[in-house]
Image (cartoon, rainbow, N blue to C red):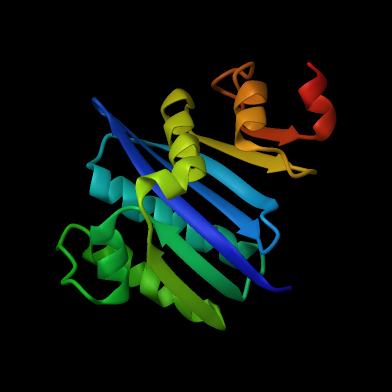
Length: 169
């Protein structure tokens, strides 16, 4: 099955919080992308919730070897045990650590925001949705192509399946 990469991101705008995750295989093909409207919370909580949802999604896809990348140093270093976890994040980080036991191999790395544009963009879409949007694709579409297609969808849409033919619109 090979290794997979999970990128996650949280986003806060005024009183709205959202999370985004994207899981790709070793060839860069998107396996799963989801965005979640989280209501109102702080950015570090949105980041931790995105991580948690991403790990759950990886488990549900049967992934056994995972590379986890995120741009929030607090969440990454709390997960790695480098920093003491703030009490507000303690339960969710502990649950993430427990969930990581489902994998044979786990690599956790902090990356800069510029290297996490896909997860950042997906998280920002969450501000426009009512609950959760699942984005699946049958081909290797580029982020800009996905953005163009999604811009025509209603915010109450729950599941969007994209194929190369969708780009002809």
